[in-house]
Image (cartoon, rainbow, N blue to C red):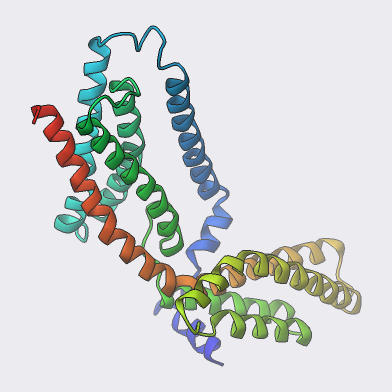
Length: 308
């Protein structure tokens, strides 16, 4: 009943029915998957460039300090300073210029990868002084912290630079998917009861931080197993209903496609709701640590440039 109420509230005043963003992305194609693929390829390319620089650090390019070294140093320093622009922009004008903030977030991620690579090439992959050791150590910490933050960010936001995910938005997605599943396969009580049991278990409050961590670490495997079970039950129920109602093969494929789409949305929404509080607290803690490290890294770089 609560899901029906939540779904009814998602209907706009002009009669347009609310459709979750996740479902829109699915219907638009694979744009989100392509973005993730490009990001993964970018990380792999950066790691490859750094690795090749490390194993060839005694090569011709690294033999002596040349103009390219200074250029890379200036580039790396400029990118480090540019990293500060995103948090400043977020505080000053994030609410007013939301689209610009999304682009600056993407730039922040790219700069966070390019800056360390440029600095490592600038330093010939050698740490000859205590000053350079401290600077590079801070840079590595910031880079690793950024990768960790990017992972946590994906659990609390939609897309690479999307809006913050809330319990209310996930609740609407869950209610929408559950309502649609009921209209498609309301004739399968065992399937509906299984989904209800899964939701109760996934959304039950954790007794401790360790309990929440253990549950989240097993969420993926647990959801994958349940998804396979529910797909089998759904397929059996649809085949039975198709035989009873004398559906054509095309009708059965259409209904099965819609049902699987709603099932994916439902399971994803429940899983995210189960971990949202934990990841939200973890993201706040990460943010409190990442920004000071970033400021320390920039300060160390400025001291290096000034020769202090």
